[in-house]
Image (tube, rainbow, N blue to C red):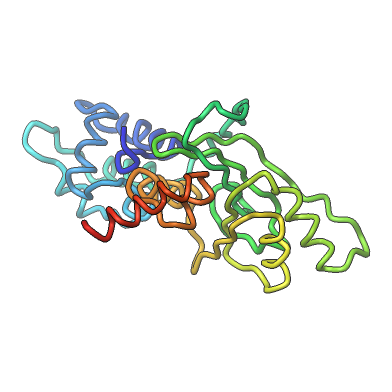
Length: 234
C-alpha cells in the first residue's frame, strides 16, 4: 500500500460502521465507491465535504437505493469522529526502517490544534512511507513560577527524540529552543487532523523528499543530491 492509498484507522472504522446501513455493500465496497467519487487519497476533509446529494449520486446500478433517513444516518456516521482509543504501540529503534519520529501539538489527540507552549499533549508517531504508529503521548507537567522560555526549553526537551514537530502556533523564542534540540519546527496555517498531516508527509516520503526532510531522515548528502538532481531532470 502506498502513501496515497493509506487511510487512518479511525476513518476506516467510520467507513465500516457506515457500511452497515447499506444492506448489500460492505466496508470495502463503500471505500471503493467513495474513492471512485472523491479520488485518492481519501482524507478527512473530503469526507467532511460529502453531502446528502453526493450519497444519492453514489447509489449506482447494482447497489440498493436507500431511503433518505438511512442516507442521513450513513452520512452522520461517516462524518462523526470515532474515539478509537488508539493504543500506544511498543517501538524499538530500527523496527521501522526509513521512518522518522514526529510530534504533534494537540489538545484533543486527533488534530494539530495546539500552541507549542500551551498544548495539552504531544502525540508522538513513528512514520514511514506506508506505516504510521502512535508510540507515545507526552503530557507536559508544567511547573509553577517557571518563566515562559524555561517552559519552552522543558517542552522541547520533552520531545527531543523527534525529528519534526507540528503545531498551529509558536513564538520566536520557543522556535529557537526547538531548533536547539535538533528538531525541525513546522507551523501549520490552520488546524488539521493529525491523520491528514501524516498522509501528506507519507506521500512526500514515498516520492522525492525535499532536502530538509531527507536530512532528518538520515539520508546521506550524496543521496540527497541524487534526489535533487532527479527532481530537476524530471
